[in-house]
Amino acid sequence: MRILVLNGGSSTIKASLYDVEGSTMSCAARRPIWRVHAGWGNSNAPARIRAEGPGGTEEMELRISTAGEVAGPVLETLLKGKAQVLHAWQEISTVGHRIVHGGNRLRESAFISEEVKSGITEAAEFAPEHNWFQLETIHTAERLLGPGIPQFAVFDTAFHASLPERAFVYGGPYEWLGRGIRRYGFHGISHQYVSGRSAEILGRDVAELKLVSCHLGNGCSLAAIDGGKSIDTTMGFTPLDGLIMGTRAGSVDPGILIYLMQRGGYTADQLNRTLNKESGLKGLSGISGDMREIMAAVEAGNRRAGLAFDAYTHRLCREIGGMVASLQGMDVLAFTAGVGENSAPLREAVCERLRYLGVEIDGARNGDSPIDQDIATPQSRVRVLVIRTDEEWQIARECIRLLPSINRR
Image (cartoon, rainbow, N blue to C red):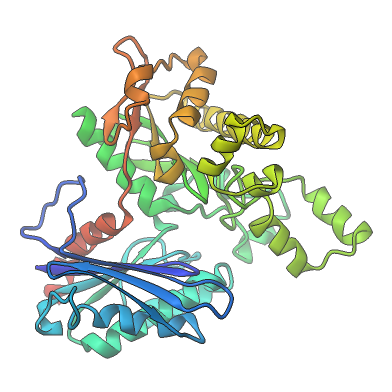
């Protein structure tokens, strides 16, 4: 069975083709037989496409006027060029799509019907940069592959559908809930993968674990996972809430926004750009939103870079404490995504601050580029894992789980 996974972002699309057998798949990520990454900026620069397959690697540039024009050329590399791996579209058994926002209607992975597409459209007001492009990707796949190949939507918000009402309600008027204003949470596909993979690495039943998952990339969020279910998370109505991130501010006093509008003349568009593009590590340091560049500047003695790192770490530790309170304990602390997987100094700083919880890591193991490993000492009361997340493989696993229900129709 060949499963095609399409993971579209606001300015990127990643595609992976998996060749799998059987209906039960280990959580440990499989290597795809074909993968492609396409990225484009907000200017007139062309989209850059890199495809890797059995026949080798190829790179190309594509002039586009809209993001929707990228999906077709990305999929066509499956059938032609050096990276070609298919003789016909019919070799694909199913397609899985990452959809950022499912809103109130779409609370779990689903077969893509007209009703589901309507729900994705409805939720697009909450995540316009992502949902509209992901809808375009669905339409492109339908056009190229035909109606006979089932497609599934896997929602970033779905893993957090298990949040109790006390965790997702905001302190505004109760009427907000009727308008869909609530905490949704994001990075759910990654957090779900980390939860299952953590149990595999430790040889434990996921149902018995209290886990704090730290997805730390350009976007950052935590999830409190109890017995494999999300019960709290730091991102909220949008992915802007919670932790300090690469270029996003994370949680700020809403009064600041009122002040900037009343006294600074800020428009909604200006606030949106400031909070999403000009804040976080980039805004505090004045250098970059990339943790690698921040750490290089810290080592060179740059004071603002040091402040950015310290503030990032402080907020992260404070929010981890909140997740532990929601869980009423912690068995596992897991670091994942670009920063979580690759920044040993960040992991060291966080774990040192959490020693009061019984967290103790092996410094040598932490510094030795650990992936899918436990870096805690034998004496540590909390296991500390570094996990390479794989959203595409998690989406493929959801397709494997759901496909039998379609075949029975």
